[in-house]
Image (cartoon, rainbow, N blue to C red; front, side):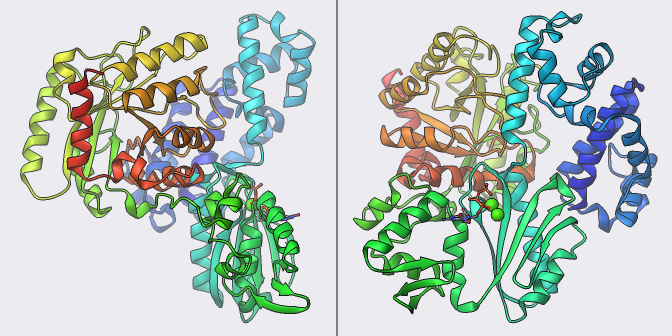
Length: 574
Ligand code: DGT
Ligand code: CA
Ligand code: CA
């Protein structure tokens, strides 16, 4: 969607303006507009200037710019700004922890104008000698570079998926394709994807490829043949590989291009042992093709269960499928509710009534509205007085038919591991999610103690985003996750799989550890806007990658079972 393309440009413009020392209100107007654009569900290309100005956060000037980009695919002002600063400097501002002001200092005092010069300045000790640059800051910048580089060329799954879905929709509409699907790491729901792989069946492959590479989203064509087109998109510079195959090899091609590479290599070895051969064209006995139109053919003929794409990482899934012992992993359809959502009572943008309506549309039986506690000042933690109003509102809402709204909180775990509400307040909640939002730099011992003390608290049911990482932006805090898992098991508490696509926390490997220990999990979105309730699919993706069965997931349970579980903690006193 144009919205995201424009939002990215506005953010870059804000950076450049700030770097140039422009007035803060100008800079902030661009940042604010970018944020608004990202939160919108309506496509700006379908709006005119008048409609745009009506949106809060978009003034007349910015509305004009949006229209300009929609109609000309360019923004003159942005092109001009780009010429005023070196390209490398614009990239430097993308590094976590390196805002425009620090970059300006580095540029002016040390001539740092790209990442490689920055690294040299760090290694040569030049950086540490600059004003306002202690060893600690330099360390932080070093970690920021490492995070940035681990992401370069990779896109979070939550950003790649809507892009892929939109491209598929357009190809379906405009080209003659009988089948079309995304494959690769995206279909495996890996947390970041290197590129998007799309596979289609068409009677007229060359024409379908022509159509694909000519889409307006395309910035650059890397390859353009009769059966394959590779392009770079304007949005995020993400690469997309589009392949057209024959109807009779669709299944084999889908299996092949879904990967992972390691999974496929292992399958090929098994095929060879059986005197068979698999390729993107089919499964063969000698020169005779014995299957490949459907993906299921491959696994069946190899003598194993069908393996869900998310599990195809060669982490033992093939051995289990051969023994018919593959776990039946949780599915989106199993989810009965969302136990971590923010409303207007704290920093969410929706009312409880609006949230309930969306939950109903999603077919949920219940949702928990879990606003922040008071120590989260920036996030407008809810005061004890406002909690009374909130509880009253929820009781009234629950009188009307619809999903049950649970009175919840995301309470802060304080420095010493105690909670940010007193017991008499905590005991009123239907469900308590506890989380760390401060002291990220504390030692592993301190952090682990904090989390475990929270787990031991009888009022805590779920630990939210247990490691605190933000993909490409912030490392996890130091916490001994094995010890946390042991404590969660002992006290029968759940660990969250936070589905916000920059968190995905616990990650797939930690989820797998939790599953092996028999620890319960909550797959929740941490939604701050209505449309973020749909992020649940990313959490389910992580859960499937971690081999989670539905029984372990507390929000696949009926409300009665959930309620009994919560009460059991309080009864046991821990
Ligand atoms: P990515 O894009 O880096 O996130 O990861 P993938 O898994 O999407 O990798 P990609 O796009 O390079 O290739 C898509 C799939 O195609 C990959 O998962 C497996 C298959 N594939 C590609 N190249 C090879 C190869 O050289 N050998 C094998 N066995 N499979 C390959
Ligand atoms: Ca890929
Ligand atoms: Ca690829």
